[in-house]
Length: 353
Ligand code: IPM
Ligand code: MN
Image 1 (cartoon, rainbow, N blue to C red):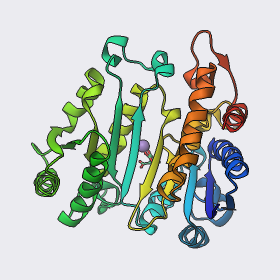
Image 2 (tube, rainbow, N blue to C red):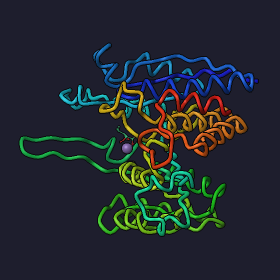
Image 3 (spheres, rainbow, N blue to C red):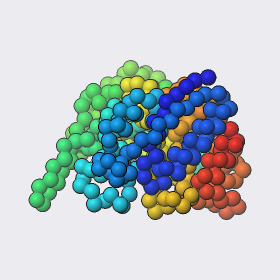
Image 4 (cartoon, rainbow, N blue to C red):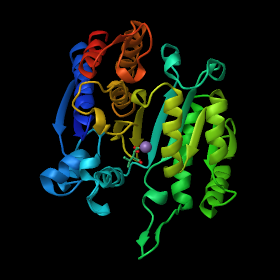
């Protein structure tokens, strides 16, 4: 029996609804297994701009740093589109990733047999399934490079150091050792100098992992390969921006972006866990969002930050059970299924633990 301090960042749009869903499931875990989760809710993103004038108040950083882990919903929305660029909600998200040193972002995409009909790919392309882990570098590259703007031009710098590439490469190879032992490193080394450094560094790290096969793919080809033969991938390791793009693609192939979790980790056990989707302002407050990505993000938190492997498995099994019983939110709805809202979906998962 353990006690864990969890910082909650509901954020904007559907964020509060999906985080509430995850808390419903965490509460069920705590009563079933006797753990205690102490939640502290903090502001980040648009709601923080409204309340404090900034997307990432210092208090939020302090509370997250003191917590055992952070669970995040989503941030952003059209309401804050007119904010100056340095004060956008997304700045809060990038800022907290940086402040907590969360350089590695793990984004697993698994095609569940129950959701085959929700995938945009034809059956024939899905016959060998999809089970890929996108390992995205999260605190470097163009997201954090120098930004400049002149009267009629603008630029964003893509820059990586060997050290930054090494540490994310190491995570990818360690992850592959626990999976299918295949790493595809995705870059644009036919054009970009930073990609050539990325590629050479991956080659160098691979010498420490003789059991793991390393191959390289240009990002344009990787996008095509994901669409025509998704089963070929085990672990993809890539830069911040390429990882952002490819993880949306892999999630769509798995049925819906509403299903997929992520873990952001750094040098310590304190990680940040969040769905890979955004704040979906168009459906906010309607109780139709899919809470599963956030719920399985909470499961990743239990496993990776708290070492609660059985409890994490119980959540994932409960999700499968509810899907087997044909309950669906709107985004994964198909013929013959029972449509439920966000709150109901979370309750069903909690009941099935
Ligand atoms: C994600 C999101 C963020 C990103 C945005 C909201 C800044 O798209 O987590 O994938 O680009 O990293
Ligand atoms: Mn994204």
